Length: 314
Image 1 (cartoon, helix red, strand yellow):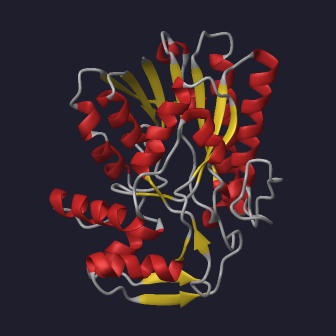
Image 2: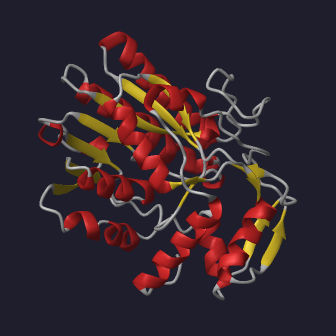
């Protein structure tokens, strides 16, 4: 298939491009290379895809570019471009989140409506659930985001549903639960933990460490994305690792791989959900999703990939 991937230079986007190319798809990558974190890291993420003749790249902002030439001939659009991060989404930064997460999604949906797409896959977030009332959390739970970031991801989900029902855009919104793996964003937990284990800055542990997260390995995520695109499913589905662990357990898992981690206790921040856990039964039924990577194996792959590149974990 011919795939368009927005946010192609990001952590998950670059893995998705590699996965699609390995499956025989041709891929058009789009990324504005914003400064949400070091653009040089994003450029490095693209080294693998850029070496493949079936990959082309457009440095472009979805809000300020002609999208028709990019979308021509596309079978599937994977929309991963977004402004990430829960804690920075408060205050004056919210306007940036609204632009990059809501308005950019609406512009892209307008550009694809009327096109004969096989699927429009939107990368949503478990942040839409906030402090869920039941675990594991199913898609039928009422979303109650507790951060501005979660609000923007939910708004974009609603846009996907609107364009699906009003214009027939075959949209799937996948609620991703705490994705980790090689090339993880430098602000995320495992990247910081591995850096701390190698002598970097101590790891800031927000709260008491008993909060849980449903960590999901990036290769399982991108496999699920393509499987969803090939299926007949539309609507909303969870993509999770299936085994939530506490932050204390996550720290211990990193220490078993990379050595002791210096931890600095911090008070919990606004917008941090206490627990997350995905009910993935819908994704299993609809497109065969099954997480295959145990947490320890994923951390080992993440640490090993960093060593092989001769880089410090960002």
